[in-house]
Length: 182
Image 1 (spheres, rainbow, N blue to C red):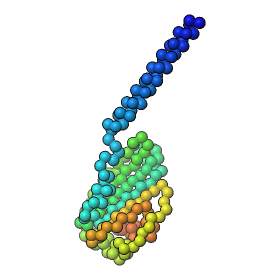
Image 2 (spheres, rainbow, N blue to C red; image 1 turned 120 degrees about the vertical axis):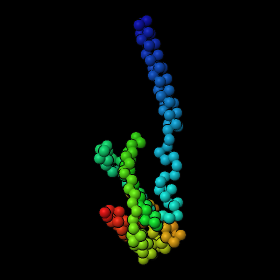
Image 3 (cartoon, one colour; image 1 turned 45 degrees about the horizontal axis):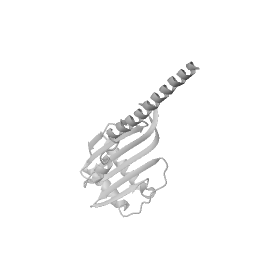
Image 4 (cartoon, rainbow, N blue to C red; image 1 turned 60 degrees about the horizontal axis):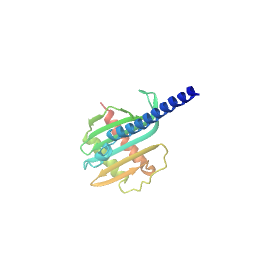
């Protein structure tokens, strides 16, 4: 019987130590979590760029179930494109996975010609998109966000504006051809 009492006492002490260690580890992880910077500390790049009064066109596209060739895991892919009225073009993106994994794509910056900028302005004007209703379409596991800015008038579209998509795709095509030209 004394052996059983001693064994139960030792087991009780071990359990008490484990419970204390668990509580300490939970408190420590919560404490460390407060010290870590949040994923987005300041406004994101998209919001900062949208505030630029010289921005002509901006788009962001995000979708899930995107395979990273680096980690061989599924996650979310994000891309952003900006074009100012001076022709400054910026494209960037990243893959994001579980556990705060993030792989940045190389940022591309180019100066596009005024002919390209004027072609985009003409496309915007000819389409009437600045005055067109562009209701959001139904999308699952993806999101689109666009901003056009012309003559001081801003128009923002969120989540695949189906009725305006042909014009936006035409603008994307003009930008892609100019950005990929040598």
